Image (cartoon, rainbow, N blue to C red):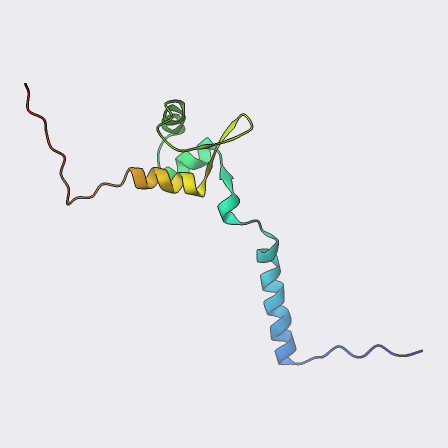
Length: 99
């Protein structure tokens, strides 16, 4: 019988094994951009109530995604909602005069 070669040892091999062990969980996780959030999770991320989110969805005034019959929010949807609410302090709204 032939013997199997001995596994290499040493500090460099140990460091390599540790680096690989640290990377494995990251390789098995799905892409965070593909994650979908529920209305409750989206409300928490946006700092608003779930009712506010549901009202805006019903009025179709914020972007959302339908997954079957469920309302979900992608990271892109949540960023778009945040961007839509951004106010530039350099611009001022004009008041209309009463006719």
